[in-house]
Image (tube, rainbow, N blue to C red):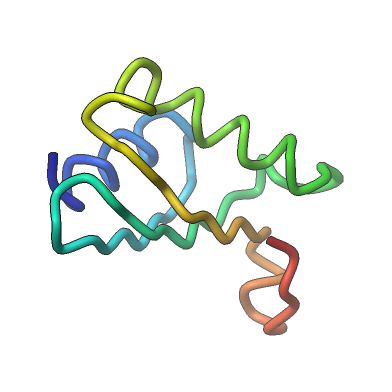
Length: 82
C-alpha cells in the first residue's frame, strides 16, 4: 500500500475532499482530510466517513491510519477538530 493510493481512495470516496497522506513504511499512515461532508459532524463520525472510503483495506493492507479531519473553513482558520 502507498500514500498516493490511499489519497486517491479517500478523494474518490468523499466527493470534493482533499487528502494529504504520508507514511513511509507501507502499513502506518497519517492523513489530513478536508471535506465539506464533515460539517456538523463529530470527530468519530468524520473518521467513519474516511474509513468507509477505504473499506476492507483498514486493518489489512492499512494497519494504522492517524486522521485529522476538518471542514474547509476549519482548514482556513486553523481550527483543530480531530
